[in-house]
Length: 358
Image (cartoon, rainbow, N blue to C red; front, side):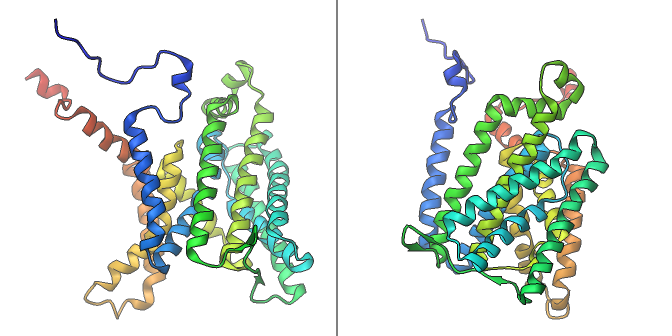
């Protein structure tokens, strides 16, 4: 008698269900990704290393916003203000007190948590557009305070921040920053995964799907809303601290309102309610302007439109956002899932209902 093998992945206990890596295929892809990440800095030039580091920095902020908006359902337009808060906290502490990296990093996290608590309070009464406008005030307040500090201290070109020293190791090269930011991005991802697998993450998703139902099920809606703002703001301010050290200076011009829109685009283009979508969206939004510039350079009339690069980037960015909202609401992660399903079902692809009837 032949042995019948079951198809699909089945779990028989909670320990299997709680594993981060469920299948051998996932384990293989993870090992391949780690090997590629470890070998990349030894073959990439300075430009590619800078692009990778930008993606890692953006991924930390995108994961934080995905927790708040994609899973907790709270709209925020103050993401750039939180990044600025972390960066200015780092710059001010370094410039005024000569504080080290191990002081500025937790201080930036504490400032972010405090801002998240204060500006999360309106979420207890406001929703939708009104909540978005209230969080937008965060951006303008932080930008105003940062600009006033620059003017009064005479730092018209920004606050210069020296490279940090970690255990006697000065981070002053692209490869060193690649290693630090890669570890920071992986650590942020693991924190987000474990938060979503815990009771807190399930409460956030219940609030997102329906506050009244969540409250009826015993979820503390006000407390979990505030917690979502605090956690997201803390992670974002830490990203701002790393941004200040990586760029070597802090200026209010680097944290415009367009930066908040870019982070919103990351969660929309990547796919709302997915951590993988946050990573894909961060990579797409960071690399998109460079792709547009590369395409424009290959055009026959590139010299004529060389001065229109920024305008073309803004226009193309808007068109891409509209395209994803209209034609692909699930974002890049939706495309990835369809590709994955195609390989899983091949060659037994599903036929349309009309064709099966004929």
